[in-house]
Length: 400
Ligand SMILES: *Cc1c(COP(=O)(O)O)cnc(C)c1O
Image (tube, rainbow, N blue to C red; front, side, top):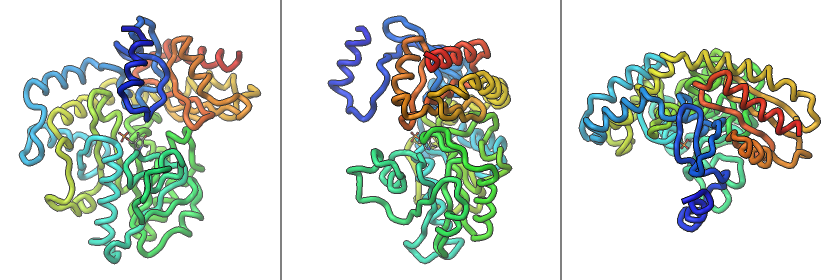
């Protein structure tokens, strides 16, 4: 079957909730993918940062195969010999006391929201059913009904109500607005450190620190969603650490499974995560031994290959190289940290999608985000040569 035939079949049988670029990937290695017609592409999306370790990393692949031949799933009705080791590794790496394993990113966010509400009732003394959580405009935290309840994106919400109450939305980066939104029943603030899906948007310097201080002053928890920004993407293990902030709870996902398997987690303190008593929260697949073995290998690869430092260095190289576009009449702004770069075009450019299409024709896969921004986020294992080639394609496509 060729590209056309696969696309026709997909259009017939798969719900149309995505509008992908018309490339049908059949084989992968490292940062390169090959489509069913044999054409090669450099991947500069990395599955929204789920592939920080690159496609089909041999070490993670081996861990996955080895574990699959032993035991893949026990459910947490029983214990397994992998989850405790992963928990210790993750908590040690990130300097937290405890973790709670789930599968998708949205489930990690839901877990953090439930923990914060329960913490509010049992520790802070908020009257039952009254807990409120402050969220940011233009956030992205996933697709469940509760999570889209506090989205400000029409597409994510339209037709999906009624929504979950208890959320207050303030502009991202506006500390005064956040302070005004606090009530005696506010139990937490939820934010991304840098907004990914809305176009790699940075808050003002020092804002996250002010949020943390405000949370401490008002006995509220700071929940930071590092599902896309975390595990090396920005050149630090957590993007929060650029601001010297240690959140009360961190949501992780995506690269925790190295592109092999959905693995997510919330890391936090014993005090906070101990609000969950047996039976109050869970997931059939969360913390399964296959997931734990994959995540363990995924974290080891980050360390052994120094991918965090690599993202930092290559990110600087990329931003410097892209600076030739700074004064281009179609370019509004180039924002980036580590290997997470948003190239925002002016409205007169006519949207980022057609540039992504042109890049695809040249053998580079990138994704438009929020209409006018091209997101560049290759796997962190990318070589300087491949990155340089990819950036040349971007520069040429925009220059034309
Ligand atoms: C991708 C993402 C999520 C949702 O993760 P899923 O695994 O798709 O549920 C949540 N928050 C952020 C910041 C993300 O980028």
